[in-house]
Length: 432
Image 1 (cartoon, rainbow, N blue to C red):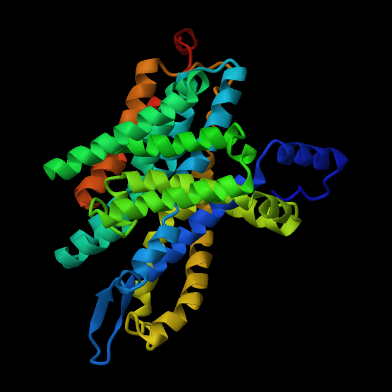
Image 2: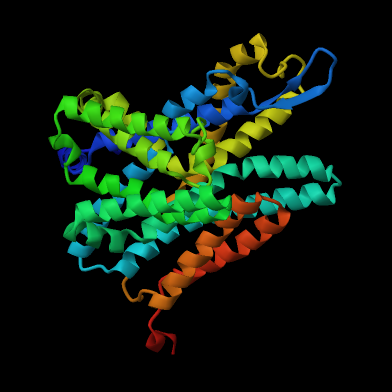
């Protein structure tokens, strides 16, 4: 958040006031999660040329013998949902203090997610449509589309639990322990039913229960509960969470790969959330000191203000750069070879630069204004609910059936309808 050129003391005071109201460690953790996701996806996509000159496509990171163990650390989506809970509760309380309602909150959250998603789905519709008309191999197109659409599951899960914040925040205010316990028990029951029946679709209920539980941890973090625990208790609670995960994995109920436990979401993600919030709290003091420095603030604010754009567009950029590297002699070594691993830092810099270039014009779509202008009125309640449902459907269908041209086209239409439904309305009398 750089100061304007020629800023005066008033601007510095305003900046200090903004910083005082924020937990900058939360901003830092959110940015770290986003960047780690970019690195993981970069290492999971292997496209290169082997010694015979043939194109090789593989997933090098997942082939490593240490990958399962590393996923217990690298699976940071629970922390991201907990941080989202912290921000959501803070925003919800601010909304109610200003006299806003649940409808206002849901509308704002839907607009902030649907608008950048609309741009991405429209892009996919155009690119996949053009590739189809150009006669690109359907099998290759299907593989690429499924890969670049993988991160879209997040939009469905995050939007769902964010829209439930007014309800869950009310439960949290009245009975925080009971609310957390009910969500946890419901998630365990869903997992038990899924394992007993072999029907994975049952696990989709944990989009509400498992992710709702993790989001609720963010509520507890916002209330300072974790900060009131001593260092030994935080470490012990984190260790206990990992121990319970290990027990579930040893019993054969869950995969040792925490990425596999992501879809549908399972109880290990809840336990990872507990451990990660505890460890973040343990590190809060040194991280807070780091965030007192101007360079750290500048980096975190620069990336954080474009976080959704970076998340949504980084995988298409990685795939595009991997494809282009095949056209440059020596730029696409065989995946998992020593040369391939050695080239990853350079490729990461190229990817981040390309994503940043894309984010410059596109970040404005995630900063869409949600306030109702003077002389306008808020959409009706049914329109706000319909907009949230329409925004949820496209990423949910991609999560279930993977991205293709048809889903890209349908998703573009539904997301456009969601954005239109959430727009402020002019009073009926002003149209005369």
